[in-house]
Image 1 (spheres, helix red, strand yellow):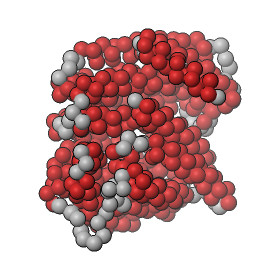
Image 2 (cartoon, helix red, strand yellow; image 1 turned 60 degrees about the vertical axis):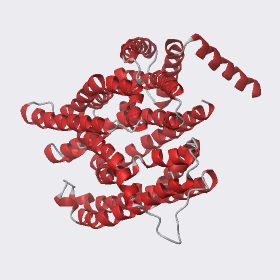
Image 3 (cartoon, rainbow, N blue to C red; image 1 turned 135 degrees about the horizontal axis):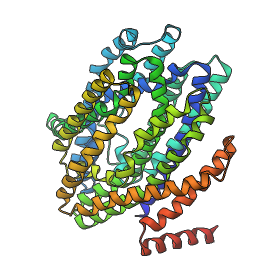
Image 4 (cartoon, rainbow, N blue to C red; image 1 turned 120 degrees about the vertical axis):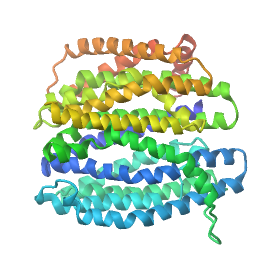
Length: 507
C-alpha cells in the first residue's frame, strides 16, 4: 500500500505539472501562430496514436509477461521476452519508416493545412514521427519500474522534464520567431533525456534484464505469444480510436480546420481528466498484477475495491470544478474564443466520468487475468457504431462538432454498464451489484458537490487568474473534504488523519 501511495502521489504531481505546462503552451501558440496551428499539434499526436496500434500488439502485454517471469525468478525466460520485444519493435520501425516519410512529404493531400503554415506543420510532423521511432526502437526500459512497483522513478523525472520542456520552449519562442514545430523539437529533446533515465532505471532496479549483444536473443514463438495476447489490446485501441481518436481528423476533413482548432481546445480539459484517471489507474495496476502473479486473489479483489473508492473520490473533485468553473477558465485562458462553445464541448466530453469515475478500474481486470479478446471486440464494435453515428448526425443534423464530441461518450458509457462491469466481476467471481451501487453513489456525490461548488462560486467575482485560483482552491479543498467523508469508512479516515498528523509532527 505504501509503495502504491507513493506511485499515486508522484503520478498526480507529474500530471499537474503537465497540465500547467499545457495551459501555458496552447494560448501562446494560438496568440502567435493561430488556432489552426494548435489543432495540428494534437492532430500530429493522433497520427502517432494510429501508428502505435501495431506497437500495442507486441508491447501492451510485454510488461505483464516479463513481470510474472521476473517475480518467479525465471530470469532466463524474462530475458527471452525482453529481447524478443526489442527485436520485434525494430522490425516495426523498419516497416513504418518509409510510410511516415511519404506522409510528411505529401501531408497536404491527406489533411487540410493552410499554406502559410504548411512547412512548419510538416516539420512538426517530422519531429513527432522521429519521437515515435526513437521510443519504439529503444528497449522496453519502462518494464523495470512496473516489475518493481517503482513508478515514482518514472513520474518524478517526467515532472522535471516537463518543466525543462517549458523552459526550452519559452527560450526558443522568445529568442526566435515562434514556430509550431518548436513543440516537436522540445519533445525530441525531452525524449532523449527520458530514454537515458529509463536505461538507468533498468540497470539499477532490474539488473538481471539485458539486451544480449553477443547474439540475437529472440524467439518467434515468444513474439507470437505476446502478439497473440496483445493483438486484442490493439483491437481495443482501434475501438478507442474510433470512439474519440478520429474526431479531429473527421472535423478537419468534413467541417474545417478552424472548427478542428476549436474542438482541440474543447478536448484539452477532458484529455487532462483522462490523463488524471490513467495516472491513478496506472498507480494501482502494478500492485494488481503482482497480486495476481502471486496467486493472492483475495488481496487482488480487496485492492481493486480500494482503488475504485480512491479513483471516485479523486476524480469527482476536478469533474465538479470543471462543470462549475470552466466558463471562468476559458474566459481567462483564451479570451479571443467563444467560452460558451468551449464549456459545452468540455462538459459533454467529461460527463461519462460522473458515472464511471470509480468503475473504470475494472478495465484493468481483462489484461491482469489475460482475458482481453472479447473485451477488445466489444470496444471495436462500439467504436464502429460511434463513428457511424457521428457521420449520420453530421450529415442529417446541425449538431456539428457537438455530435463529434458527444456520441462517443454515450456509446462508451453504455459499454461500461452492459459489458465491462458484469464481465470483469464475473472473471473475479464476485458480485457486480456493489459496483452498480457505487456508480449511483458517484452521481449523487457529484450532484451534491456541484451544488456546494455553485454556492461558493456565487460568493466571489472572478476577474483575473488570482481570483480564479483562489475560488478554485476553495472549491477543490471543500469538495475533497466532503469526499473524504463520502467515500472513506471510519477506519480509513482514522488511518488517513493519523498519517497526516505524523507528517505534521515530523515537520
